[in-house]
Image (cartoon, rainbow, N blue to C red; front, side):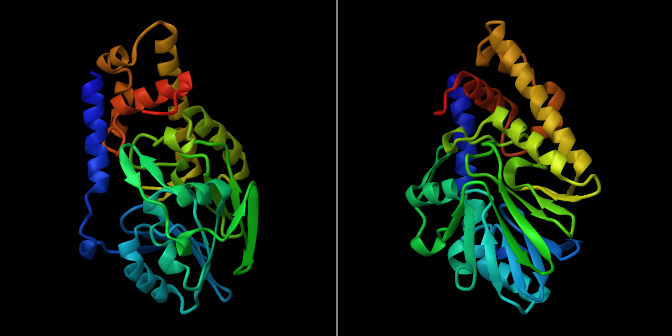
Length: 295
């Protein structure tokens, strides 16, 4: 079973490593509310605040898509991107940093800069150190607020969930929240233990954030379509349930392989079509509960 799990991980990593045909990627811009738009293409969802003061941008997908993303932004505003916030350090969210640094000051939690400096791994895929111009030039430990386009834009570091550098961004007047990869709307949550992530930490992060969000707010996930606060709460509860299932299995003396064979996550089969599969998540949560950070 360990060999099968490793094979599944390698398949997922290879899927990441294979370069998609970026020439076929189209950037779709959707008005969310107020000053905020969501851009979808390949990689993590982008949010932008557009107004007289310029553009505030959250994440920037893959490097080869920068020209297409800039073209999409130009249709929304002739103003430059003044600030860019990275929600975490993964390459599908920070790949366009170097290109955006032509006009934008890049901000992120201090752990994002630390990890980008040295590189690392996502699953078994190696991430090379970032070039200097792609690095955040302003870092924070807890939060930072940008006052542009008639509203405070709050970038708040939350407990380690997806990674240890996760930021959630509040567009306060527009009533929009960008969750980064602390919310995945395409399948099972992605917990990057090697980047300091934690399944239990993800629940703690959501418990910290949800009370701060207006019930009628629009919620932008790291991946997938626009969500509601009700969707976010459902995601939080399901993650909590999955942790409890794995914890009960471990407490009863079951191995990861036994829990996989018993398909304990069968009730969540609708999430099995995403990047992380059920058997992988069982292993990840078990390792998190045991304090094992490495694969």
